[in-house]
Image (cartoon, rainbow, N blue to C red; front, top):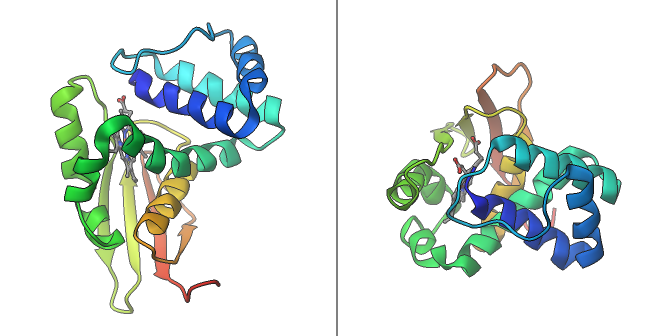
Length: 183
Ligand code: HEM
């Protein structure tokens, strides 16, 4: 994945857990803490090793690290200069989700080696939706949960999100439901 992703893991750890935690995580993952280059491509294994080392160092399940990362990504990318693109892609959560593939396509113009996920939102009659998530990578569904939570906060919406059972490799489904504020 592009270094931007690993840099965001670094930003999350340093801001929430301190610089010493980041140094320990890099040591554990066998990675030079000197820093990642945002526009360089790194093996996916580097990111998975960072998540695993963060999970052990911070004593959190890997799913919790990934969820926190997803939520952080919605703030980090805006700080890194992608705010205009994000603003163009919708003013409600549903509209934004419907445009996610278009957004990664645009990002791919500047990052030709991007291997983006794909999303399709299926609106159900009762106002809820099924969000289909297709990826060439395994194990990142908790990151999607964090992403949706971060986006809901951005649009000031309150949403319940649930990963549905019986998933196929490469295709996960989430049930999204609006919930009353504060619940
Ligand atoms: C402007 C903001 C965003 C940027 C710049 C961005 C960019 C990227 C980049 C660089 C990757 C790594 C893939 C690679 O390097 O091959 C990635 C992966 C991913 N992105 Fe985005 N993204 C953005 C917003 C979002 C949002 C809002 C979502 C919400 C669902 C999302 C969902 C994902 C997921 C789930 C992955 C993991 C890869 C996978 O599932 O295979 N991204 N994105």
